[in-house]
Length: 198
Image (cartoon, rainbow, N blue to C red; front, side):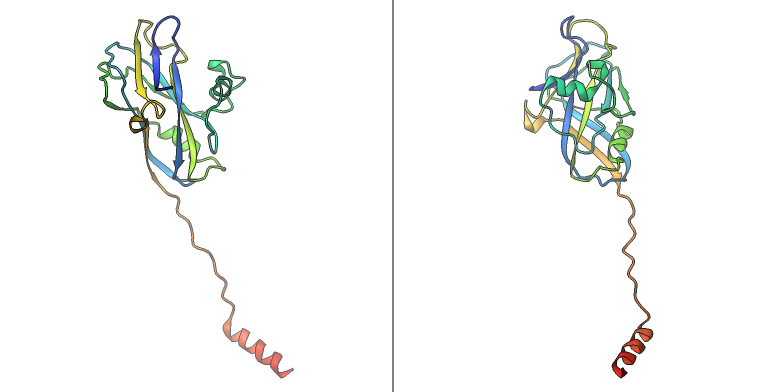
């Protein structure tokens, strides 16, 4: 859709949230994640308080694009009717009491999601250049149940230039150079001379 939003809109649209898929993540496997957060550009202003949310990730080496609602449920887990929670990170971060003066067309940074990103990029099958899914939602219904207690941001489909951004600072793992075996040159020379004599 054109925007992602979390919180409580009304009794019909409660427990709201969604997911963001970031592609071409160049973080090498085994890197040390120093910091990580995502940014959303607000769409519509909101001053209602007590929007509370959770942030976690899909535990996948290379997250694919979402196709159906059932696909989303299977990845997000039991909180939305999925069969199990095997596809989400064990690290879950709370982003609560989000900016009480959420102003239209303003960039907002999430809380740190360093542990979430590290869990994804530390998988044995992770490779730099892969895609990553970050969930941002209030599927537990922790926000104040008052009309329009939501926070909304653009998505890529809504406005590509205003799409969510993922910012990560990392240190790549130290890799040792290849070991080259150099035979004993003098021994090799003697062996060649002996072969010539025969």
